[in-house]
Length: 65
Image (tube, rainbow, N blue to C red; front, side):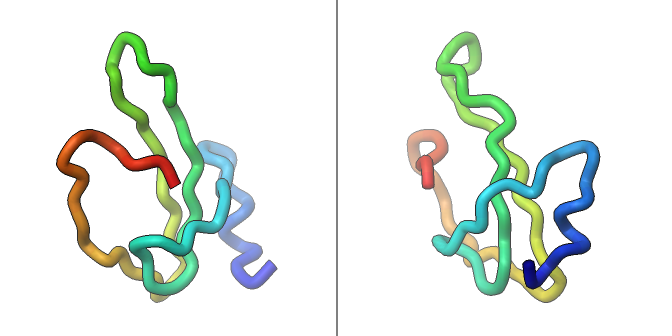
């Protein structure tokens, strides 16, 4: 794995590599996806060194990738 040091987290697992809206290697681990009581999803994104977010917005909540 190219960014092996990232996979050693004990708080949040690395998650799945995502391509959309990122430059470089970024990984998404969903934390909360139950529609009640929040009606929202919560995810943790881990960025490899040098990775960046392509800024964007979600007009109505989170778009699942």
